[in-house]
Image (cartoon, rainbow, N blue to C red; front, side, top):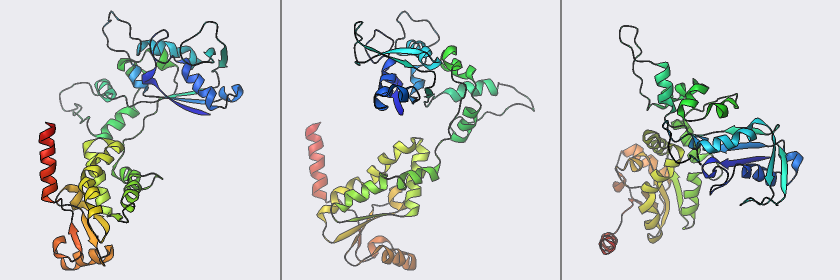
Length: 321
């Protein structure tokens, strides 16, 4: 059994929030309440970089969601028999407890660890001058970040804010590479519930097909890559490009295909609407053969928002303001 837990909602025992024992209770439920299966399970603790110490200076208030959580996780990760309350929520001293042995449970902690590359950079590339000096590297480059993360050692994580006892209980430190343009294109198209398939379904509700060229997909991926927002940034880009199209298409008769290419993604013009007998193959052949602009091709029009709709939108925004 595998359970994915979020470290951001964990707090030290006695404070508002989930106790660390709730992770083991989730694993117990995931294993079908079979204690033997539960004790051979896998726990993935996501966002574990968010439980680092608040800062180097000692504060008056206790760090209940940072260092306190790390201390609470020590015994669980190390491998002990942990008393887990059967009823989640507030602990009841008279309540029933499950005794779960965590010796054979695999714990994996993951997180973005933003800023760790700067700590590794200071350690590896000390400031120097002369002919053999290390040149300054751009830490915003994903390839440079990946190489730094590959060279991470426990000392860097301790400097980042993790306590030495917690880091020492994880013998293997592995880093993942950042997504490149090809990966982002695959994310757009390959998964079962990919973004492209979602938009195809939305347009199909109005009996309209949705087509994106290979260059259009690459342009969306390049824009997301340049912004540095990763896979989560793909939706905001496609939503901005197709916002008007999704509202205009149902009111235009005879439209059967929405055609999106790299020019529409870059914002140089609106997406193309194919009508009547015009097919994708015909449209691409005509544009390639004659080199004409879309407005010169019959049965292929740009998305156009009527002026009265824009005026009504402006009036509505003024009323709201």
